[in-house]
Image (cartoon, rainbow, N blue to C red; front, top):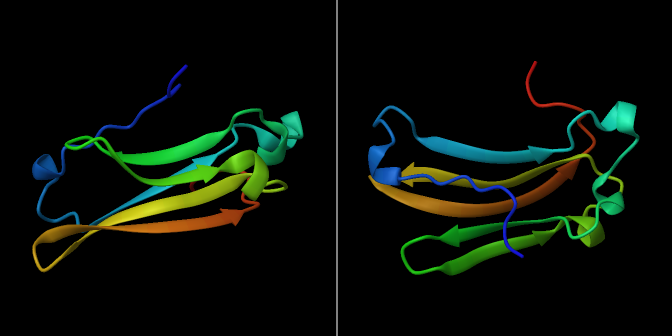
Length: 99
């Protein structure tokens, strides 16, 4: 029926000293729950330009990342004072973010 969770970013408000934003998704407590993206129904990630509602990229996690527990989805970075977007789409078997 729509996106369950959203991250909204106003790039004009990102402090000048920050040059890159990396978007990573993982399955919470995947080891204990014995889950990977291939087991989750209707799992997807998409990046949408809010200004024009253009979908920049969509990752179907169930089909394309079966056996993976984490995904480096995308990066938004500054280049010559402008924000650029890069789809990454790198699945990993990392069990948590951090450390």
